[in-house]
Every structure is written in C-alpha cells, then in structure tokens.
Image 1 (cartoon, rainbow, N blue to C red):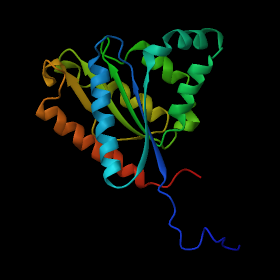
Image 2: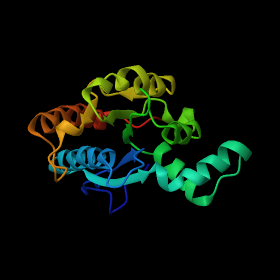
Image 3: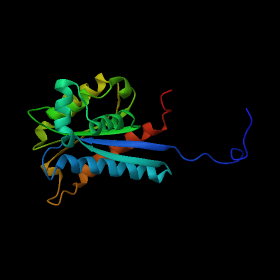
Length: 199
C-alpha cells in the first residue's frame, strides 16, 4: 500500500471521543441533572487535559417521555427518540443518573433503556449515578442500576456516585465529599478511554 503525500510524516488527528450523559430527572430544577452535569464536566475536563477531542452530549429522558411510551406500546419511534437512542448506543463513554423512586430507578429511565439495543451496549464503559432525598437510598446503585447495566454487558465503573440533599449547597454546588467522590468515579471512567474501539 503506497503512502500519499499527506500521509507521510503527518500526525494523525486526535480521535473524537463521544461522551454521553443520560439523566432521568423529572423535576425542575433537578438535582439529578445537577449531578449529571457535575460528572460530565469533570469527564470532559479530564479528557481535554490529555489533548483528547470530546463530543459531549446530555440526554434528558423526560424530553422523550411521550415518545418512549408510544414506542413501548405500539412500537413506533419518532425521529427524535431514534436519534437519542443512537446517540447512547454509539457513545464511547456513558454517564447515567436516575432519581430514586420507591427504592429503584425512575420508570421512564428504565423504559428508555428498554429501547436501547443491548448488543450496541456490550463492553461500553458506564458510570452509574443516582439521587435521593436521604442517604438511605444509597444502595440503589448496586441493587438496581448495576444489575440493569450488567445485563446489557457494559463495563461498569467500580465507584458509583449517589447524592442526597445534604450533598449540595442551596445553590446546588457539590459539597466537598461529593466532589471528591465524583472525581474518583470520573478518574475510573476516563481510564476506559484508552481501550481499543470494538472491531
């Protein structure tokens, strides 16, 4: 195979890494969205510091609630929902966060991921996060979220991030201990960025 004049001695452009955050928050303002933004911002900052080009996107599941219900019941997907699902399926790194409802993730969050192609999710690095009113719900990450994404064959970051109302200031800035846990989880997620893309 011959080498063209633009190939010889020309460094390859850095790979564009897709980082997608999916938030299942339903209230406004949403602490789940605040936690998602915190984790996404830290991930982008970590990757950018290494010279990595990043395409960062956030998907609000509540924006697709009606389309998710329609697709679940009659199997018809809108273009907007199809694009959101493809964005998740094609992500290099995924951050997911859900509020706790009766000890588990929100129904619309689960319904959205029921529509995601499980084969496309295999070996995808995922950081799990959740929010709740009190620290009593901390185990939702290990008892609900982790089994869901393990079923799809994802590479799950060891450290999950849970935040209750005590973990935020009135202005929705993270308390130091939440910020520290987020840094640790993001550090673990970013390590997966060095894995070769599935062939």
